[in-house]
Length: 82
Image (cartoon, rainbow, N blue to C red):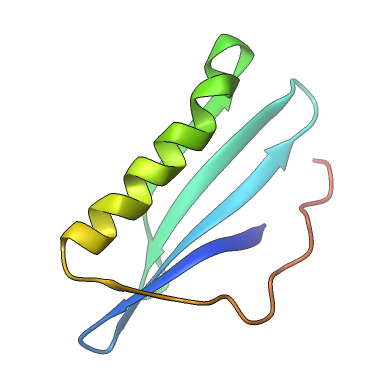
């Protein structure tokens, strides 16, 4: 998995991570807050084109709820195929 976005709020850390699945051409975003997975959504087939908009909407919700985005200083390498 690779870290796409990181947010902080009151000592808490949230990360949006990405996993590529090449067996059936899919990509998944997974949201972790303080190390616990809280959301996951898989995009494949016709839904694959919806991925960028869904990712941006998710990031906007964090900002709208007073989370501050921090740069991902050491971005993880792209995900190897599963």
